[in-house]
Length: 288
Image 1 (cartoon, rainbow, N blue to C red):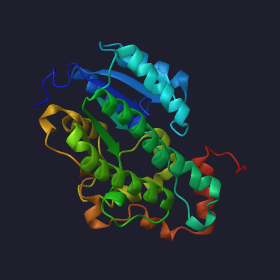
Image 2 (cartoon, rainbow, N blue to C red):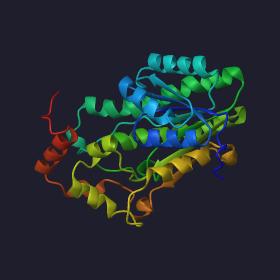
Image 3 (spheres, one colour):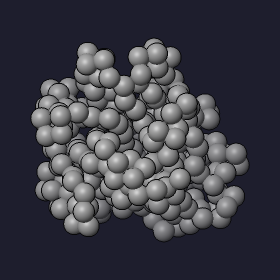
C-alpha cells in the first residue's frame, strides 16, 4: 500500500516535527507525496530540519510555535493556511516527559508536562478543528498517546504524563463521535519504547536503565522509527478512512507483559534518583 503517491496532495502539520519521532514521521510523509509544516519552539532547529528534510524533494514549512500558548497556536495555523491555502492532517506530536517519584514533583513540574501534552494538544485541536468546521471540510487528526494511557493502567514515576496522555486519548475518542459526522476523523498511536536523543535522555538517562527497559519488550528490542512512521502514514491515509476513534499500540507487546512502562524504577534508591535527575539535565545541578 505504500505507493509513492499515497499522501499526494495532502498538507500535514506536525507539532514537535523538527526532531525525534515527529521528524521521522514527516520524512516518511514527504516520501509518500505530502507537503509538510513542522512546528516547534526552537526556530533554528526547525529551519535546519526543514532544509535537510526537503533536500531530496518535497516542501517543508517551518513554523516556530509554543503549543502551550493559544495565541501562538493561532499564529501557527495562520502561517500554514497562508502558505498552503488549506490543511488536511494535524499530527499532535509535541510532548514533554521525565521520570521522577511523584512526591518529588512541584506544581511547576506538573504544569511543564500538562501544559504541553494536554493543553497544547487541546489548543491545536480546537484551532484546526474550528477552521475545518467553519469551512465545511473534513480532515484527520492523529494524536500520539502512550501505552500506559491506552491500557488504562497508568504508569508509576511518569504520573503527569500518564494523566495528560489519558486526557488526550479521551479527547480523541470523544471527538471521533462528535466531529466524525462532520468529516473529521480521529486516530491515535500508542508507542512503546522508541529511543530518541532528547526524550530518551530525560526518561532513561543511563545505559543501565536503557538496557533494563529493553528487557521488558517481548520482542527483545526497541522500536525503529520507520515502523512508527509507516503506521502513522497508513492511519492518516485514505486507506484508513473507516478507522475513527481508534488507538493502535505499537510496542512489541510490552504492555501485555506489564502495563506500567516505568514501574521497574521502584528499585532505585533516593541517591540514584538524584543521579538520574542530574543526568537528565545534562549533568547540570538542580535549579528552581
